[in-house]
Length: 451
Image (cartoon, rainbow, N blue to C red; front, side, top):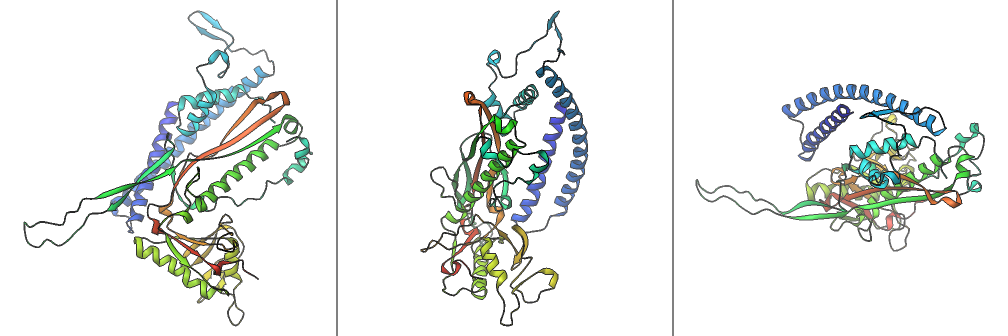
């Protein structure tokens, strides 16, 4: 439906415009002007209208697709329903599949890429048609590997994917769409700026310095995961393919987050924040660490961002064990130094609940604390230190292709009744627009805490 496509495109443009207005004000550390505030209100009103219309048209499209799916199921099960088309006096009773030897001009893999990454509408239509044709699917370790899943339906809710660290930090970065093509990203950074000075006299020369810049380049990394599954495990079990796909997606999410924190920038890896050259390094060296000794280091990490790039830090990232170290600390009378907000704390080092992971509502010095188990715990000479990162999220640019993409290849090991499931995603990361917008607290004071 072309109208639906046009409305979705217009809605996306409105969202980008709203983001641009708010981001510009944030970067300039100011409130919205009256004009900007009016523009946002107008855009919001239009977006609500579009959302309502898009919802209506999507419902119509979904009903039509459901009808086509029912037809495909009838044909796949040997039903007698035959689609008849009249073209120039001829009657067409059979039509080749969207992807078949008779349609060599259509490439399934190319269309998967084009529909998900560059949003090619024609490719998306072919993929949707193919999905309808393949309404009855077969998918594919062996049943022994999934002994906990080949069970009656009422027990399958007990199954759980492997616990993983997830992507807490990635979800806090400034999200941007990945360009439609290319395997690298380039962002300009000014290295020599304009100058300004008071004009000595009327008509005399004013300050004039040529601006100069350099390119910051990031490779686009491919993060992928694969599994081979037997058809028996799928056909005789319940929800195995969904569980495996979910586990693969969690694995890819954790690896992306790990790259954003600690990637080397070499050998296909992304450049992680702790590998950025020229960042603010804060050393915490002590054989007897305490919260009283650590707190000034965190404040130093914050002020270095303020002093060096003149922007506010807005996030503290640490390993869950370091936050627990803070929460377990008590003063000389045995009272905790980090208190829940509900207790109306006074002179507390930090506030927030003890339980939680990711962005759980903890604060130090007014900045939110993000706990992320992907933070290294193998740093330092002893290989057992964690680190604390203080960042400006707006300068951590994460480019993603929209979400993980999955392919099922039934013919890879067809004679073994094996199906290969592959998940992958493309991502680029630029954390070094302003290297000194990152502070890293590290040292012997961050060895494993004791409780």
